[in-house]
Image (cartoon, rainbow, N blue to C red; front, top):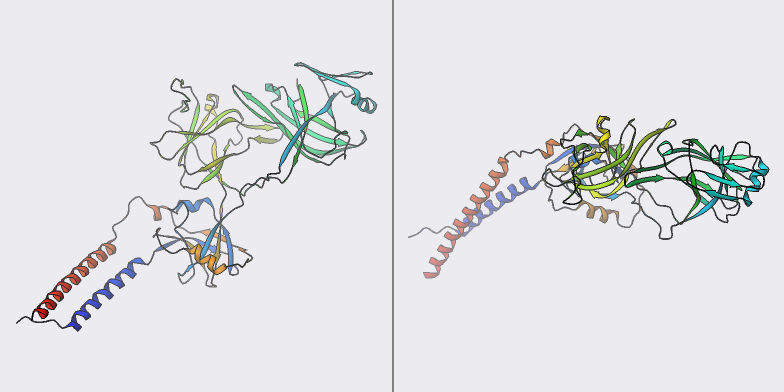
Length: 475
């Protein structure tokens, strides 16, 4: 006669196995977070902290989904990431330009002569500019300044532009702009450096002086060329009026990459299959993070440069180089000030490898730096009065909790005042989180082994139970 296992013992064994499995599951599913920053100066319940680009040296998620904020008891706090204000332009913004009458004036010109210039004629050719009056001929060879007539304008001016025939000795003009109501008393308006460079098929022009002149406030302007006036031939002066809302420039964080001399010193830019390679001065750069950059610039330090520049990038070393920017880039000392090209905007880019190609004549120059920029996130946290708080990286990047959803539920329709806080980087190298070699997790292997054995035991007991039930039915 077969021994029948009582039902209560089977249930007891079954419950013990289930409890053991559940305990193992909880012991494994709890995430292990590595603190990388300590949050300092956190005062109040609602705090806001600017993140810097170094966060991407630790995070394995492009959306920073593995961030977690912990209190002193290792409890997770709700948070959300807020992008800084992006560049926005009003749909009503307009720019109106119109030519202005201008006169190159010699040092011996009197105020009476200047006032009569309203009825003069100006002729311009490649070599000289003549101002004809009934009293005298003012030429453009040695002018003291340029007189600009704005007496008939019925609107404000936000800029004064100057065009001239660019030559090597006057690519950079250092100018001063003044204004007058009576041709006797002059009021300073602005100082600026105007730039016009032509190299082969490329050109660069920065020829606008920013001003703020209200309607009919002044009668004349006086433009003095402090540097670069030798053999200068001005062809046009124009006024600019911008209306509507001005563009909102986003806050930028920038950092530099050090250059290494590229192995290949011929251009990788081949527009067609028939393009011939040509020599360049090339440097390459490698990023340590995957921050989504949207701005870049070249830092030449105190090295003069004013020629073509091409910037390339690629995601890995097996890809082809992609052209990201080309044009004239300059860095020059004009007077006591260094003038340089403005940074350029990019579509969001996370490429790791970058390459800069300059004219071959720059081969002996000091290595330039590549400056990257992004619009950093703001980290908003709802605290629980259990400091110190830390920002950590969760090893479980695919966790199911949504801290931003919890954040929104707690915040609801309230609009709190956010108190500022700062981050202090802890002594944790990025390699501690993103090392190339992953050690064997013996606890996890043991967990799966025990789980498989537990399932096997459950199946064995189930089969034995079914057999006993069948035997009972037969009897």
